[in-house]
Image (cartoon, rainbow, N blue to C red; front, side, top):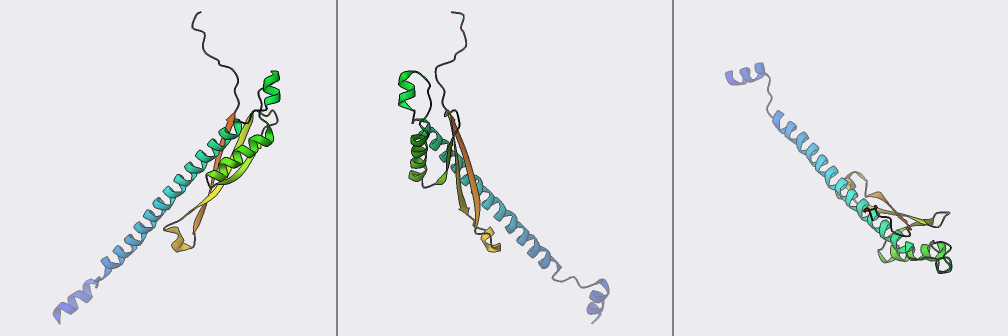
Length: 149
């Protein structure tokens, strides 16, 4: 009985540590979830950038033969370049857009997609959108520093 009065006088804080630990555990799970899902988005963005760059390079191979053979210019055929880039995107299982610059020397590819979440799906976010960009510019000739020759 005396012990009960002493506990009441000092304030009974039994279970206080349990609440603190529960709050900390929930916060740590949330942080781990953000790290895992954020890392997944970074990997998906890197992949989208890689695919976009490769698609732009594939489209850059579609040089307009009539202009190149006659020596007028080294430019891409817009239709063939777009088709080649879209074919690469399709083979990689990606979707995106392809554009050719007005001077027909630069191809820009934008890949769009999404990545599924592991932890954020618990709060209703099932996927995160991802965008990747790639660009290829046609270069003609070799430029090297003069070595005194």
